[in-house]
Each structure stands twice: as structure tokens, then as C-alpha cells.
Image 1 (cartoon, rainbow over the protein chains, first blue to last red):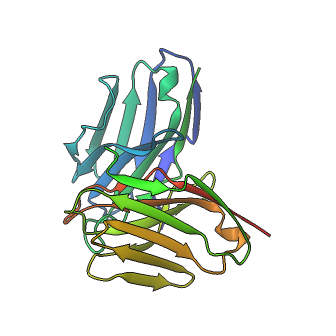
Image 2: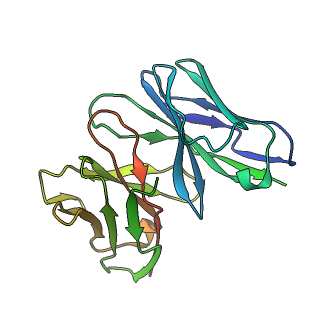
Length: 115
Length: 112
């Protein structure tokens, strides 16, 4: 069981550049979540999908952020253009949708630094 | 979106001590209260969870105490060890697969 796989693990970019973060959820999981973690705000939900369909994107901070899930095994979070305040650790998590509701399986995160 | 308030922000205890982390929630519809543990450089992982039909749940050295009337729940770590040093998040959600709402986290350091 490979778990949730995120890439890249670290990204350093300059303000104004496009950033794309990638996630491969656990096979068979119906739910996929994108969270952002900062010291000030903790873990914030950005968007989540059920069966590849976006359900709630109210946590996406601005139109600069977009997320897609073209199939059950892949999702992207894109920031265009990036700004220094976007610097954070971005986590992808998946959930089986049965059993313990709310049991999330997190990836190891993508640490983004925008200079 | 801050519907779960967690305290303290950081905590230092000696090995063998019993750190206690507290959380308070606002939404009375919440019916699932997990705790997640996060080590540096890793994603959070489920540690223990409770539903409001019980007042306490114990798994190994970790115990959740739940007070429905006060809308509070807490995590106790018995006989804490340096390996327990991590950030702990409380969370809450309600029926179905609604997303978890997380507290801001508590950074625990257990010193030998």
C-alpha cells in the first residue's frame, strides 16, 4: 500500500510563476481533499472531491487557485500567478467514504516557497 | 471557519508526565471527533477518535475525554515519551463524509 503520493515535495519559485502540485490518492478511495498548513492558520481545507467531482471549493482563497481531478487516481492544485503569501505546506488527503467517516489519509505534503 | 478551538498552542512536559490538550467546538451537529498526530516532515495521521455517545475512549496510552454539554473534548497522553513529541490536531465533522474541521494544533515536546 503506497499511501497518498504527492509531488513535488519541495518547490521554490518566484512570485508570478505558475505552480502545479500533484496528488495520487489511495486506490479505491472516493474522496480527495486539498489542505493548506501554515503556522498562523493551521490546517485549512481548500477544496474536496467526491468521485472526481468538486463538491466544495469555498476554501480556495482566490481565483489564482484552481484544482482538478481528471480521474480517480490523479489530482492537481494550481496556483497562477503565485505570491509570497502562498508559501505553505499543501497536503492532499484521501478517504474511503465508508467505515470511519472523516478518517483521512494524508500525503507527506508539498512545501511551497514563493520568493 | 474556525469552529474548533484548540489549546494550548505548545506544551512541554517531562518524560512520564501526562500532557493534556483541549478542544472546544461550536457546531452541535458535530458527531465525530478525531485526533491526528503529525511528525515533522510528515502528514497528519489518525491517532484516536470518539463519538458523542461515550464520554471516554482509551487506546493504549492515549485517552479522549468528551463532555457533550460543555462542547469540549480533550486528549490525555499517559506516561508520555520523547517519541510522542509531535504536533497534535483535534478535529470535528458530522454525519456522512463532510470534511473535517481542524483545530490549529498543539506542538508537544516531551523531554527526557
